[in-house]
Image (cartoon, rainbow, N blue to C red):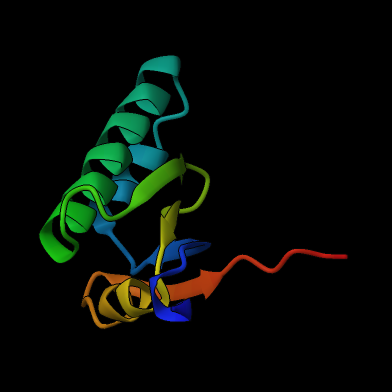
Length: 95
C-alpha cells in the first residue's frame, strides 16, 4: 500500500550547458527563455520516464535546474536512474 502513496519529491538535474547559457542573460526576455526551456525540459523528462497521469509536477525551480513532483517511491527510483538527473529527494516536512 505504501508503494502507491505519492509524496512530494524535488528533482535536481545534472549540469546543462544550455541552461547555463540562458541563465547568463539577465534581461526579462532571458528570464522568460530560461523558464520556458526548463519547463519543457522537465515536462519532457517526466513524459519520457513516467506514465502519463501518474504524477503531478507542481513547479519548476528556475534559480536551480530542478522541479517538484508528486510521485511514488518507485517512480522516484525511476527518475534517480535517469542520466539527466543528479538527485531526487523526498520533501521532509518539519514538525
